[in-house]
Image (tube, rainbow, N blue to C red; front, side):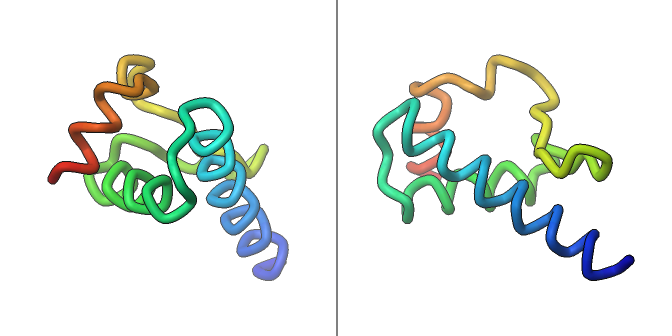
Length: 72
């Protein structure tokens, strides 16, 4: 059961990062930095049922907002 939970967490993280790379053209390293900031600031939460990270507000899914996050 714990293994399944850790798998969902890892899959959710990988999916979120790859979505940033594909949709906004950031490198994987930049996408990981955005992901870590969003998670640390509690902008995203893991939906344990689906294994996906959910944004607290859609405005955070914007290239300009992500660029400002990278500048921090």
